[in-house]
Amino acid sequence: MWPVEGGRTPRAGAGTEWEYRGVNGFAWATLDQLRSRTSLKWRRYGEAVLPLWVAEMDALLAPVVREALEDVLARGDTGYPWGAGYAEAYRGFARERWGWDVAGPPAVALVPDVMHGVAEALALLGGPGDPVVVTPPVYPPFFAVAARAGRPVVEAPLDPRGRLDPGSLASALARAAAASPRATLLLSNPHNPTGTVPTGDELTRVAALARAHGVAVISDEIHSPLVLAGARFTPYLSLEGTEDALAVVSASKGWNLAGLKAALLIAGPARVPDLARIPESVAHGAGHVAAIAHGAAFAAGGPWLDELLGALEENRRLLGAFVGERLPGVNYRAPQGTYLAWLDCAGLGLADPAGFFLEAAGVALSPGADFGTGGSGAVRLNFATSPAILIEALERMAGALARRR
Image 1 (tube, rainbow, N blue to C red):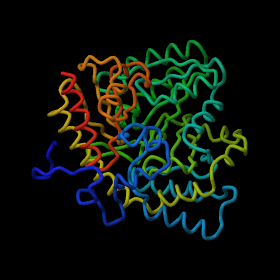
Image 2 (tube, rainbow, N blue to C red):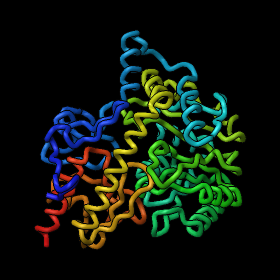
Image 3 (tube, one colour):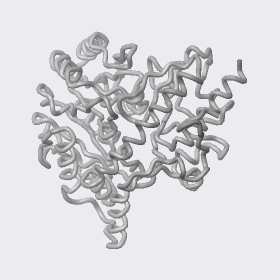
């Protein structure tokens, strides 16, 4: 076993002695608690597998969110969504965290979730045949939502550091613009799966390139609350030259609320009239209970989030040390944000690294090939779990590789 904390090693399921607990209610769930969950992450594979794949966190619910939900249920307040409470809570959060003054309700629309918001944004900005530029390796649903809209994908691969590549992007935007005047650039900010957080200068360059080619921009900012020490998130719409862009935000990732569907589609000043074209039924697709929960997270969940970020930073450190010492042939660059690690396993000589670790180690990871160009030979690992579970999973992976040698 790999030792931590002065030579001692936590064990998954060994209670909470080693789990990070904060004064504002943050805590990792124990393995027994997690095995009782019925969501995708913990039910797709059998109990012999440790799931570090889909982007669900293994944290207990933030007390402020739980209290909001309990209040909703006590009142029987389970009707259709109404009001601007969610949007106002996000405005306060954005102002406090990033110094960004988000425009008022006419510039904000309630949508069912972030990817539904992206789909609605694509429908506002173009139609079948109009290209969508993406920056792979990137979140697989980007490809799926473009395909459902009948819109061809043009790839602008990231550079070797996992960052936006101006040359690659300029070339892709030029090709997309030549094919249609209604081309769209779909950004992942922070980036999933690499965990890079674009700087303000990088995004300003993106805005200039998009403007030069007449390409509209949609920024998926679902991971924006999850920026770790050493980096700073920049809202795309906070920059000059983004007046005709759209952004989609949610508390889903920051507070583990994927099962409570609600997100916000935000328009730059030139796009505000476009939001009026979204059918009223789209807002009804969001849950009223969900919008209240997300609003509670943004309004009062900051202290809990800070404790989560501290726990994620510790897991990031553990992961980096373990990979460097125990997983030869695996290359890893510490993510600046998200709770996702992009592991380059090309040096292992495996045709399907995710399949190998599932079968040989009992650890479920996301296959890199699903993320497009640059993903082959890689895996995405979700480290939003207790140190005990994370280390046990990594021990299993190291053991599988040792047996293979």
